[in-house]
Image (cartoon, helix red, strand yellow):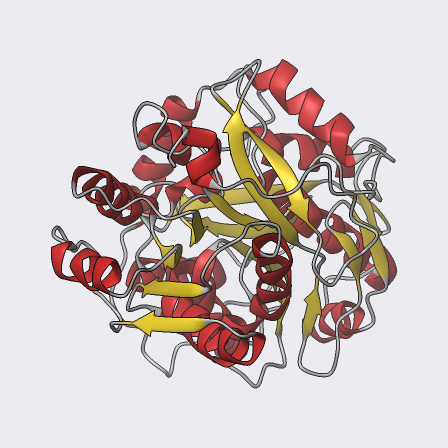
Length: 430
């Protein structure tokens, strides 16, 4: 991947799309195929399947900026020393668009292995991309690390030998949500809305296990398919049950539809906490006007987090500021997750000093590193849980919306700067 800093995201998507089309993909990979022999080359190659387009593309709006920065930081002193080469080799990354589609993600991962002979796979953003890529890496015995993939969803594809996940936990989300909900007086009746996919199913399972024991009544009408256009039956059911807390997990386009319909039908809960859909300022803006005001979600990363880059020593705030000044866009949570994965890759290669797959795998398993995501140390299931909290979208100064860190859940070292405020209070509803 070229380190040209001024490439636009539109040009980047075009180039990535052309690469994917030129390679060609198939829906299946014959089991008898084996990875090609490692070739002698003058660089280390990372394969990076990413959902550049499609329903979860909001996770990748920081690409290629963050990828260029991370690779530049890794290569600033010539790359990473590899014994068999007898010198430092620069790290390069090849990114291809999965289009948020699991089949394409698997096909791209297979091409990376069979055609490009990647040394390491680094994948990010939700089960639709991570799960199929991890499965391919297990089949072909390729070291793989993932970020921004809740560990509960990752483990559903296990057990793992070659794939590792450094990400957040639904368990911690629930702790953060309960903490921030306590700041608002409600009747504790929760309307649960979860998309019928691995993300939504795991979210609903966590909610049903945690909320009842915490004194909340759950109105769960069941999972719904992606692309649902009419939520009238669900909204009517919530109004009948006097729901004051909407709790959901869905893609940004689906949330936009249900939230707009809720306003049209005069259903405005005191609290609206939504996973996945509300993690990004662009998604909140896309709802329209000020409809996103007061909504809340998980804080998978925040500039106030007390962590530094293992590559440069930059703080979380410095990275966010550098992104805003360099891109002209508002910082967004995937900055930490995307960058943190590159930190892990660099650390693993520095310790392994070889591209031998088994040695690299063992180096992943022995990781003990402080990153911009937080401390990384994989357990026997190949997961490392990174800290997370809860945030609320409020009126912004420089940009339309800012996010206030309103809870720290299981991680008391995370600094909160406010408490959750009722949507009714923010909107002047009595």
